[in-house]
Length: 352
Image (cartoon, rainbow, N blue to C red; front, side, top):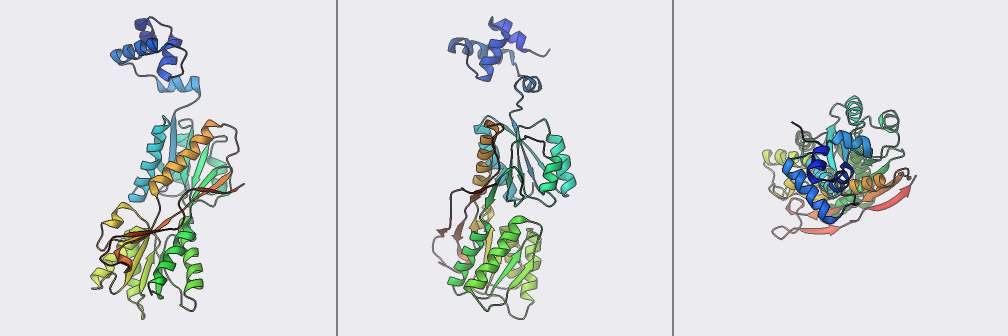
């Protein structure tokens, strides 16, 4: 038989309201009474009915995260950061993905409706202002990650442009003028910003050098194919800068199969600093995104919005990146890895 709140109240010789206040941590009972109630609840193995409690409090104590994919180290680190911070606020995390685009995203958001008190949405194809207006419940606190969508939601972006520019500056400083870039999906905000940073940096720091940009899709296999395309060209690049670490890992495999030494024959750099980046051979120089911190900051923004219902949410915040110098770019060979900071703390860059 299911134990109810009335059973706990009867056993503890208090009112149902006192049990509710004690177990929800709302005060209104003495410390001794609260301890007695909690001991009785534990002995009876009482589990509060979440749905019933939500009807009373109008809170589910759950937040949603909608991501374009759940595969890969970037997404796992992002989820970890969101979840750890959610737990610190006494919240649980409901995660879904939009593998196949806008229709999947819409279905996921419908499934979350009424089940979450707020939502974090990572930019993905089709999730634009029109989509959000049609599918995001009015008044639901929301934070968009890595997005240029103009909506009423708070936005938290990585400083992709500055991070890319800084890595190109580093590579040029090492004497690599012929730098090729492996771009990401054209409909991805991060990929567009990183390519823009590369174009701007090359125009400023290596004027006259022809742009070498090949397409990828952020997967390891696309990096592998991009590297083979670059190696088939007449003039081999001195360095390859991939728009994410997974593509850089694919490039590394292609270079090794071609008998090239990295960085002796060709330098290599990535973006994100996923955990595996430091363990490949040679360790990968990259632009570090504090991925778990990105998730934590998104959750902090969301919690603040949830605590201030009706407040203006429209704002843009930016999280900076670091350049992490390891062996793959040819700097400090045989020495310990070093880090050159670009920007670190999230900053509020504008309001809308």
